Image (cartoon, rainbow, N blue to C red; front, side, top):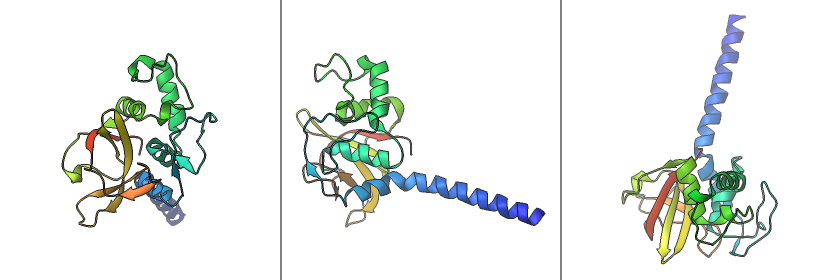
Amino acid sequence: MNKTLFIISFFSLDVCFSQTEIRQVNLSECALELTQQEVTYDPSYFSIDYPNGDVPSNKGVCTDVVIRAYRKIGIDLQKEVHEDMKANFSAYPNIWGLTATDRNIDHRRVPNLMTFFRRKGEEKPISNDARDYAPGDIVCWNLGGATTHIGIVVDKKSKDGKRNLIVHNIGSGQVLADCLFDFKIIGHYRYKI
């Protein structure tokens, strides 16, 4: 009887450990899965369902990579961003002249995601050391002027082994690229993984 109880306890502990371990790398794996889908860069405004709404699966921009990867681990950024913006509208950027939230587009704007991750996640230091950017981290860049960009750090390395690669969409669909330091980093976050 005691032997059976020990085996059941050991099995339960092992399952819990495995689920925790899987969750830690899951965002990276989900982002990598997205690179297998053919997606055309399309910044058009779409009316989408709420919650769990998405633009057509063959279209998207950089923010859609982040939204889709998080959705694969059960987190709906459309809903989470909308609810936080609705409750704290003045905390979010007033770049687009909006006077109210728009659950079709708010979560698809890099400055809004940056504000959300800063408010609800962990804001990590920005550095020039590639070792500071771990799989599952979210990185935001300024591409020049007012153009911002976002991507997910994954557990694949650059050819020289010095940097983790990024899954993002900068115009060629959802791709894996060695681009961590290609542009000025303006945000570095970790959220619920």
